[in-house]
Image (cartoon, rainbow, N blue to C red; front, side, top):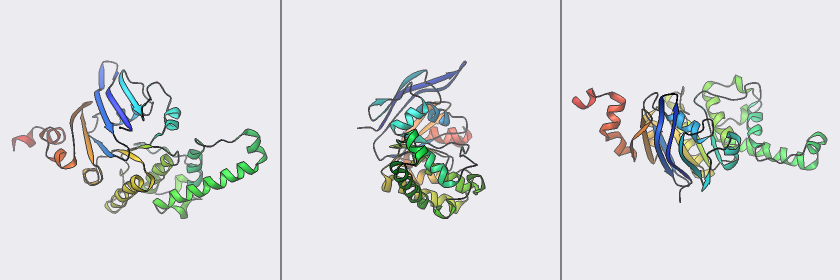
Length: 257
């Protein structure tokens, strides 16, 4: 049974068909990649999956539940969370506060309990702090818990955004270019962390990334987009050798040599 089942998804902006006939099936615990040249429609697919855009046609189901027509927060509640190509942290909150805000998606505070700081409120806050510190340990950020998000180095901001998405307790997490701006050593550490996200936390992962070394290293199966259409689907070794993929990235000259 698939956790995420997408069939014939499409969207148009004016006269431009940005994505068409996009289908994808990801089993629970899968670690899949979505790649393609700049402008291929990858982030548009993520925006469709997370309710930022409403599809013109097609279906999206998470664990058998339709996500079409739901608002982004409802999709997050259903168990699908994401990061963004451009970092969208709360810069004037601390690292810890960024995670605890995400955790409130699953919280059940009452107004009176919050104002009076009831025993239930204090116990919930303590549990959220504990879980947030556990998440920060994934990227060795526990010592930065009280730092403002805006003061973190760029690579750590990227890591924090991944952790914030995880703090919503998703079943499926979408990572939009998580390695952007990272140096080679940071990318190696990121690859190991993505594997740990899947194995230790039982998450299913769909990854957009331009760093092909990272994609080929961590992904089990890859879908390739070009001009909004799927041109290839397969395991990393097959994708690397696919003539349509090579042409999309390097142009027709690559096939003539």
